[in-house]
Amino acid sequence: FHSSQNCGHTYPTFLAVLWCAGLLCSQAPAAFAGLMYLFVRQKYFVGYLGERTQSTPGYLFGKRIILFLFLMSVAGILNYYLVFFFGSDFEIHIKTITSAISPLLLIP
Image 1 (tube, rainbow, N blue to C red):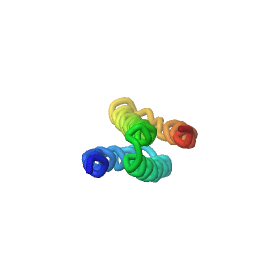
Image 2: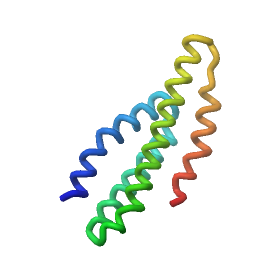
Image 3: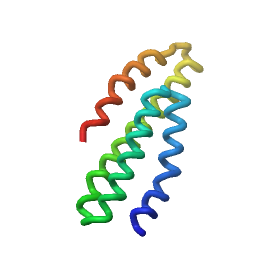
């Protein structure tokens, strides 16, 4: 019961940062992180069926993916304001960096 309730509480946060990261930064790394998050939540849920210590790695891994998506969203918002106020666009650099960092999400 607790694992499904925890998944229900974190799902709106996940959707918000996923959409913001995909729309404001880059779609491919955001989609990859979203798929990874779904697999991690499954691992978290299955870990709850055993001992509670088995669910901890899935929980921490999920938090790391949410942080990555949040940082992508912040980078996209900062880029928008840099374009709006100063006319300098760093979108290509941000997409390159997020595409290079997203495979690091596979490291447990």
